[in-house]
Length: 291
Image 1 (cartoon, rainbow, N blue to C red):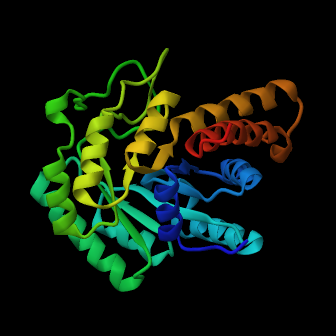
Image 2: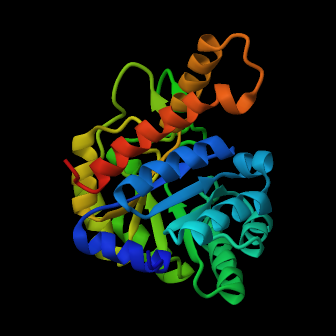
């Protein structure tokens, strides 16, 4: 399989009105589950590792793992430094060979978010002109977990969501390749039902105005209908993390219950890989409109 650049795969997805799936990991079992699902349909995939996940698995170590799969299988699997909150951590990911980095300055003032994002973009492009830099405007929460209610500080009424004119100014002043706006999405997944509906009209307006591909964060819990509409409106990448964690834990519990005497971890962790693979396969089919 001839592996093109991540930028090229994003352009292809936009042209085809599909989206690339972005799935987070903090261990190798989840990585294999994601890769096997993507491989089944010959689809490009992005592996995400947030600051916390990188602290656990190792920044250079996760880069080496993903790169090894890409090289061994000649496969379009890419690595993103998800939710990075400081220039120092962005620099660490860039220097480690990540394909994409996200600077998350949503808790800063708008002006400071611009300044810090621009600094990250300038450094990343000096080191590797091919690396993609993404940033966020609009706070949608920070934690990928099961939620009782919308996270504290997250406001999803229209006046608090990202405005097209804000997006234009942000992109113009930072030079980011990708933008993650607040469009009714939240990090985490509400217990007992779907997350709030996405503002599809806003997604369309932001994409048209700012001119760069959009990324939907907090995809766990959104309805299939909203995903399809968001992709048609201009979303190029969709992040899934909470559902991966839930699937992994489900498989782990099953593996331990079915094999109570087993002490070889690679044996009772097989169910975790299978459960992650199931979730990723379902999402990839949805994002790529495969029936």
